[in-house]
Length: 449
Ligand SMILES: C[S@@+](CC[C@H](N)C(=O)[O-])C[C@H]1O[C@@H](n2cnc3c(N)ncnc32)[C@H](O)[C@@H]1O
Image 1 (cartoon, rainbow, N blue to C red):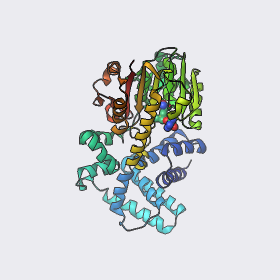
Image 2: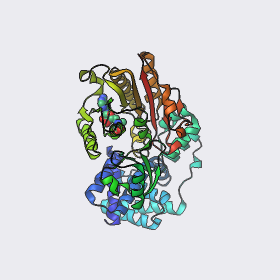
Image 3: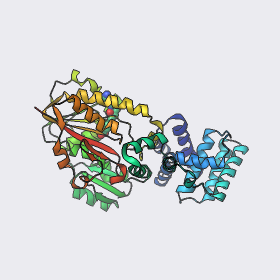
Image 4: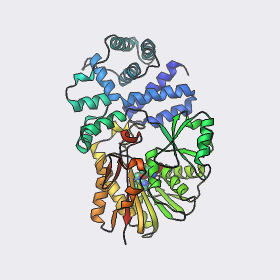
């Protein structure tokens, strides 16, 4: 693909995300699949789109310094300038004159001479005079919001929850690269052989502290590895590998995964049970439930019984106290995964968190009745908001005195996590800056006699 076509594709994706509510990971995947890009172009496209979205508020702050407040510009021109600024400030791969040249060419093709002149003038002005400093923003909270491109309401919310120091770390870490991690399918290959094979193929690999099955890939595109192609590893963030580790699983148990798509944790559970017993995996959406079946098939795990259901109504399908273990990996705001899904930070609103908390409470209420006495329930989310995590658990415990937090949970955590700043009486809140993982919450409850 020519440089011009690649940048035009990136711009089209940005406009769809920024103006029409598209999702960056889906649109990038689609472009990679349909346009037959080289690895290099894939990398550059991903970097330009993710980087620009990730820094949107910062780039808007830059643009304000060069364009008069009342000047009307088309959305695509604004995104073209954001994308060009992003490359000029944060990427050292392409020299500024080439970035400006490409942007002006795109403006000529998509617009007219006047637009090309505006793009040329703005970018040259920025190149000449430099970008405005964040020091000009006097209020420290507003500065953090602009400098790290997180909406002000969200920064204020995190400050209320965790204070300025932790919030600053969260915001900055959301802009940092997170290494890909994979889970080995232990019924197909042991860890040492997997590491050796990957190293032979040129990957730089490190063991994860979160799970025996986890590997961090420091170098190399893992999707191209023979282990990935042969279903011997699957991609999963390390933090979420902790869930199956903390479910205290044994062979022949009957397990419920109430919100299971796309199946990362359900398949991990089946692996921990050595593919013996039963894992009932549900999802609200049929299309998503099919992804769980697909993943189970790829990994050759046949104890998964996958179905579509609203897990608030599972009592219609299952009898009381049927399960030894239950995982409620609840639908959540996703504020822990802003590095891989940066659009979330601009779409989510306070009201969304409130309505999600309501659904999470209803799900807990419903699935808990299906747990055997002495059975264990793990509640988890990929968010860092207390009202979706601790508060859900606290409220549930107030209304269900026959449940308690399982003290063993804290003892069984990997040694390195026992000093985490996110450990409270209610569970473990992982922040993205602590172990360079997604932000993630989990805890384990036990149903007493
Ligand atoms: C955090 S994701 C689950 C990720 C999954 N556990 C994994 O490891 O791959 C939450 C899932 O819950 C599903 N969901 C939302 N509301 C639900 C409900 N009422 N009943 C069942 N599933 C629901 C969503 O479709 C989504 O796939």
